[in-house]
Amino acid sequence: MRVRDQAAGSTSLRAHVGVLALLLVVLGALGGCSRRQPPTSNDSSPPKLPAPVGSVRPPVALTLETADEFLRWVAMVPISQKQTIRQQIAAAAADSRVVDALTNRLLKFPVTDHTRHLMILSTLGEIRSPRAIPSLKQFIWYDKDMFSEVASGPSTGVKTSYFQYNGSSEADSETGRFLAEDRTNLHCPLFNLGGGSDDVTNRASVMLHESWHHWQHAHGFDTSHPQCRGHDCDYYYFHTVSQFDFGALDRYDTNPSHLLFHSPYQIAVEFDADVAELSQGWVPVSVEQSARNYGNNRLSSQFVNSPGYTIGNPRPW
Ligand SMILES: [Zn+2]
Image (tube, rainbow, N blue to C red):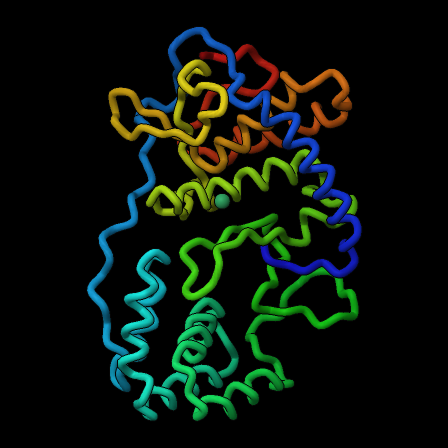
């Protein structure tokens, strides 16, 4: 989800204020699932945990011959190890052939993999070579189609940054970024007036979902989604409410005999369920209903192991 929606700027600001207020109130209710029977699933196979981020791959030297391999390696290095990347770049900084190899790749259009281009830009930035400046200027002022595919979405008459454009998904999170801060991007669909995702409750649960990717990254888990039915999914890790004390939602335990874990879609759906069923009396009914709808849609479509529960029915645990 990476669009700057020009038209929705003020709407999004108001929405964020609303979301924050809603989050503050409802976070108190999170973890308020009720207690009863042990958890069950429609799916007999146990949920899989996301893979831990593997041990750091051995560094790839940045040379004329290994430039592509280096860029692939950089993409795999956790942000905690970025000093290793800097060392590889520093060792190559004086080699003009390496600078040329990178600028040649930078100016190769159309761009088909913008993530790789961001790696090239970051590497050139870290090299700090005056030799790269003319190419960087050329890149900045390039006025033909830089990308092979034209992004869709309503035109605002403003040139969109294609490096951040995504007109189809609601949001995404970038974790483990190289020489940059991690971040979450909220995209146009979340704010497109009247669209299927334009809803304050949905925005709140999407923000929780995205924040959970950062939680995954902070705890060394792979932040990508398993796929099911052709799109991003997650596993549902059943637990009773009492297993997460108030204020302890960020805890986890990967021991299979007492597994305690949340996935991004699960955290969003638990939030939806709590808004729908346990929110404060002053929360509008429309918000509760919307939370139920969005939560149930995700419950039915976004889990590899169907939870076998819909918001509104008695909780099976
Ligand atoms: Zn996600």
